[in-house]
Length: 599
Image (cartoon, rainbow, N blue to C red; front, side, top):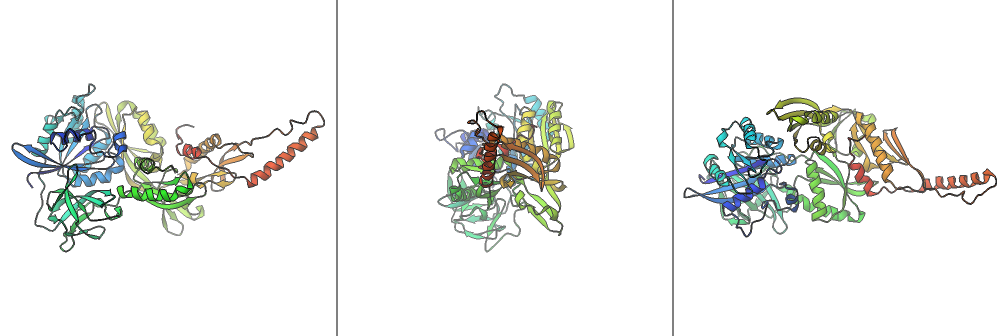
């Protein structure tokens, strides 16, 4: 065990974490130059394209240092706020971590957030200043930030470049010298933490785990503590570029187990593996069910694709256990599913993976968050869909989720960011100048307000400099109303939304105006209305297409024209009673992407 090192890499999006990992794999001969490709651990096309890690990865490297071989287990972590639970489980499986900071951008909110998780787990922290090869690198100023944040010595910060390979050898040496070897009792009952799982269409679920105590042999009878299910260890092994089968793994090792599990719900990240007949006394602490925070309806563009969509979501859930869904139907969009996501990026990725990997054309409705509705009868309902709201007369009050948001930005943009957050019903909690140019702002804000377009606006106000991190802090009472959109008196349920009373009028007006532009004209007038309960708060009319029936009347009495117009009016009225209004898909998509900033 003294020659094993388990470590993770913490970094904000696009700070060069994947490139640095690639360079380590090359330097330790884990991958040959012939098999090498950029972002080697990011095996999804979407990850490569966006430059983000969506799924955390693990890989074992062998490195010779001062004549001795060391086994280095890299447990990679995703960098985005939506995947913070995966990050916390990956960190729990390690003894040390590399904090990678971009020498051009400095410390970002996500890095600080994940650093706090690492500090809570008492990990050894090695600071790395990456991208030193870039001409715009500003190492001296950013080293000041790192020293202030971590409290390390200035000369402990490693200057490196994932692209050129500078400093990578120093990083590997520091991992061996500074990160402690794992502790644990090889003879104690088995206690192993699951930190990730992947789906293989031939062999079922591979669970990735770290052994804390005891050992596991091939064909052992094991039990997953939190799900209570038991399995046979059909195959165990270690994670190199390919899985390498082993007969036994003991305390300190990181590996995988195949037990023929077919459903991802049975393998939960954070669960503990132990022996069935000789279980450990207590599970590894910190297990939690991933809680979806954002909900949206997913509908096939073509109604005949409903079964295909169901199959696609089932297969996607095998790779992504944090995705939840259940069937629902809408009068406007037909049959579909109500899906729960960890956050907006998670929702975007699921939608894009459905389109790319499963060739599904889908419409996603307005994202909502989950509200607690207290009824007059003392019940508490959890509502994540406006259509699930009880009758207003039965509602005592509604509570909505609030987040504690931390925004890091340059001092020049503080005014714009404050205005944006206060407009979104945020309350400033703290303002700290980290340096004379960098400021950290903390806000209490409703989660529903950041669901639409908050992140895009934050980036445009700060010219891309600001970074956001948040966690759900509590539920608070709020004046929320259900905003309905009516077309000729009929409610379009797919466009219903729950919104704050103060925003309802402006939002209703904008939705009506947008729909007026996008709904094609019919042979009759179409009334587009926004309503709260029975009260109409905004209205637009799409005028009818009219044939000039009086064109053939030249001269003569005016009553001839009036007679023809009255006849046409009766026909239009009859048509309106039987006519259906088809809302084009582009109208749904445009309304869902409404820019709330424009009046």
